[in-house]
Length: 526
Image 1 (cartoon, helix red, strand yellow):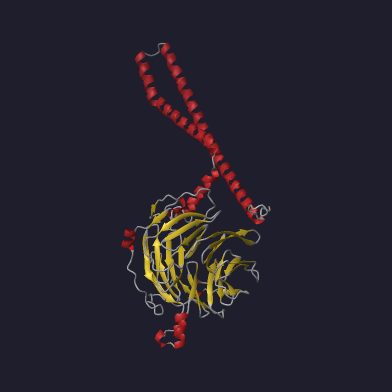
Image 2 (cartoon, rainbow, N blue to C red; image 1 turned 30 degrees about the horizontal axis):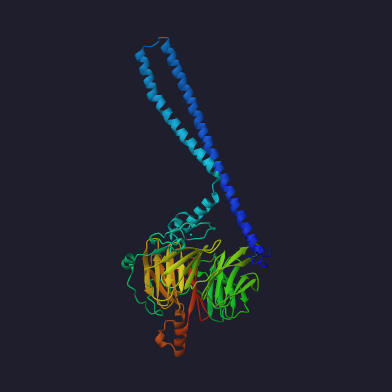
């Protein structure tokens, strides 16, 4: 419908189709829920009817006994005293349970009437509320299905459909300072508790001479050498790996999961070439699609095609890209752009909304977008239907520098800057780790590990409770047992300027790529 001529908002066919599909799915789900509840109520009515018939039978039987006793009394077959004792015994033994049963039946009938009257209520809102709570409670996710700060950040962690009025959440273990504005409820991590649990930051050892564990974590299990230029970005999905090198070279790799883990190595499947030679970001969105971007353009790509399917130009310099199967979020200098993915025979995207905020770093988990803004605030947005600010969380812990890496799962939150990295457990309101770094670029949470990657290629592997398991460096293989002081000036200069990127493959490997054109696979479990 054309609404541009009279100044009203225009509607696009994909947008209308998306809206109608969403409404149909919602109504269909509501009908199924209503039928289910009606069947449950019918079963309850049948059960209560059966109880009622049983009680009527017992009542008739007792009435017959009473009539028989009255007849015997009138005929003088027993004395008045014997009659009183018999009737008294009958009442004490038989009538008391009957009276109690009748009261129970009355209560059940009132319950049935209440349920029948309640079928016209807004079941959709109730269903959405329960689903929203189930997806946003962190501690309960481990108990029922596994998906800031909270997962219990407690009304906010993991994706869900839109709710007309999302109830306010309070992260588990964090105290909420309620304000006058519903969408700006601040949660503060207590400074006293933080001081008690905050460890003394310790200077990390030289990243090129890491402390070696008893098992040899530092030796790569495999190395990939197909690229001839610097590695810019890595992304893994299921048993697939995408590697992006400068010049726009993209390679698709596949892991053979039948191969023993001690000898696993991905195989090169396909190579893609882009006309855009300054690509910096790559991310899977499904098993058949990935998104790749430079600082000015974003491309949606089908792995079976040689060229991208869709392209969008950024209004300003793109500095971070996060994506999942439903959304692509772009962080630019002074705004955050949200793209919604449309799934049909092919995947397309719609420009959904823009947040005119200056963000330091962003993270995406389901339909929840976490935005670290300047200062000590972390904002949580629901982007499932319309962009809605759910919570503003204030972290009263001093973080040295601008946050350039934000990572979150159902229990932990990591903030990385040029100088340090901080890991919180928001279910217990504790700082698990706070240590200096040389510029954190990425933090990964796996089932059993926390992996911290610095810009210089150093990698720290921790257990989930932040016990250091190993340290290594992507460029350790260049040293070959030689100290840095023994290298040539050119090699020293290269290592001084070299950077690295990484990703994880399940809970088994951390994959790193760097300016040496190499991709190494380090085992997480030794």
